[in-house]
Length: 322
Image 1: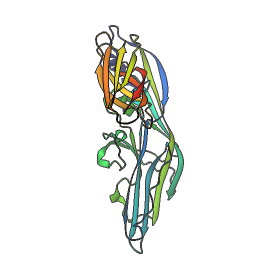
Image 2: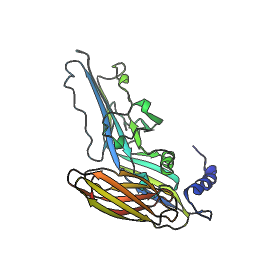
Image 3: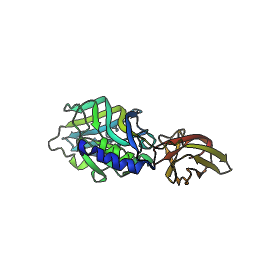
C-alpha cells in the first residue's frame, strides 16, 4: 500500500492524464459520495453422496438486495451420507456512473450490514476472504460459484458482524480505467468442495451469513479544469423489426472517448453497454445504435460518459429494445 508521502506525486501524474487543458489543473477541494450496488448475486453449489442425502436440503435463497456467504455441511455416519453446500456473494457498484469516476480517489470504504447469521459452531461473520475477478459475472447468466483459480488479490476479512472494508486500491483502479470493474467476491471458510471431508468437522456444521444494505463511500479530489457541459439529444425510431437510436452530443472533451449506455430499462438491473465513440475536435459526436425488436418496446435513459472528465450526459429514448 502506498504511503501518504507519495500522494502529491500521484496527484500530479493522474491530473495530467485525466484532464486536457493548456493550464495545469490544481486541486480545489475534496468531496464524498455514497453509492449502492448495481448488481448483487449469490453464487452457489451443492453436492450430495448417499441415499438419505439424495433428496438433500434445498439451497438457501437470499431475499431481494441480499447476498449469502458461507457453507453448510451434513454428515450421517450410519450410511456415509454427505451433503455439502457453498455460497459466494458477489457485488458490483456502478463506478462508471459515479461522481468520482475518472477522479483521484483519496479513500473508499465498503459497508455490509449483517441481516442474519446461521453458524454452528458460533461465529460473528461467515465472510472469511474477499477478492476480485476477471469474470464479468454481472453480465452473464452465471449461477455457479467462482473458483479460487478465477480470483485474485485474495485477502482475509476479520469476522465482525457489520463489516467496513477499506477498498481504496480496488476503487482507484476501476475509477481511473486501469482495471475492469467486475466487483467484489466474498468467500466463506471452506471455498472448495475438496475441503468438505468429514475429518475435523461436526456432523452438522455450517456458517452462513446474510448481508444487505451494502454501500460504497468514496472520498475524492476535485480539480479546476476547463468547464464542459456535455449534453446529448436522442432520437428513437421503431421499424418493423428494430429500434434505431441516434444520439448527438455537444460540449464533450475534444477528441475524447465517449462510452454509451442505456439505463433504467424495465426488468433489467444495471446498465446496458451500447458501444463507444469519440468526440470531434470541437467536442461533438453522433452515435447510432440498432437493436432487434420482435416484441413490445420499452423506454430507457441513454447515457453518454465523457471518459476524460467523468461527466455523464443523459436523455430519454421513448422507444427502445435491449
